[in-house]
Image 1 (cartoon, helix red, strand yellow):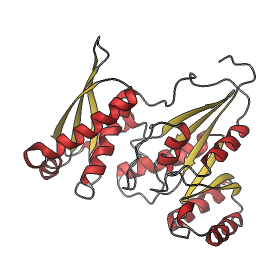
Image 2: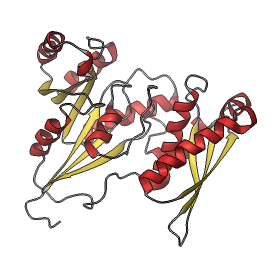
Image 3: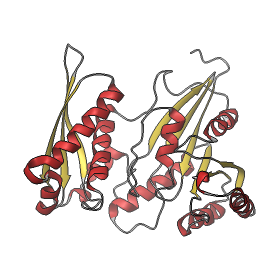
Image 4: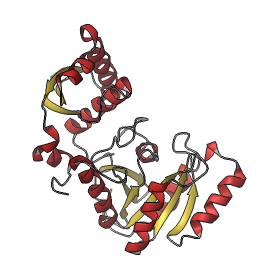
Length: 301
């Protein structure tokens, strides 16, 4: 599309862990660009989802959840989220109101935004779980904080209210040339996206059995003349006991993870995928600066 009369801008989506940020970005884009699981703190890197409406391109930045970090990796994730606030024209704070209240982590984010004197768009998510009177009371309480330019009520999972949110945000985008091609929906390299899809399947398969100290790397990516692709990935854990959990009895667990990942990768890539998964123990992978560079995180945050 030609650059004449184009509009383009960034919207950073922040919030506490499990507020539904990745679900919302995927819903806005209309495709899977960020991994989703019921577990908190699954998004590690900043992921961009790109939406084109007419002559306007909106680039949504899905950030890691903001919480009180303890470990090095957690600190790097939270630092990336706050960097996302500084780097974009518009910020949207997504709040899980499904329990009828604003949680402590979200209140801490609002307090920080006040300190920064940063005005943001407020998005109340999971509204389908509340009665109208509860919603209106929460909206009035949030409006009184003086941080929000607008308040929207949505269900990211069901799609309620998401289209209006997108239309209104698109209207706010400044004039300027598009940053990405018309058919591009994310800035994430395919090798990293493939690794993230497999990591999502690990979360979904293993529940609470495996701590967050696991990561996936795409070691090789080989494309064939018939259109298929062969992907080799390594799942790193920190202990032999964790390796045994991931493999499962007779390798049944890792086989299920591989099948689920391959199926979704074929849908995303629209081609046949041959996926090989290996499990290795690397005790101190969270202390490896190279891992952080892969995700676009600061090692010393």
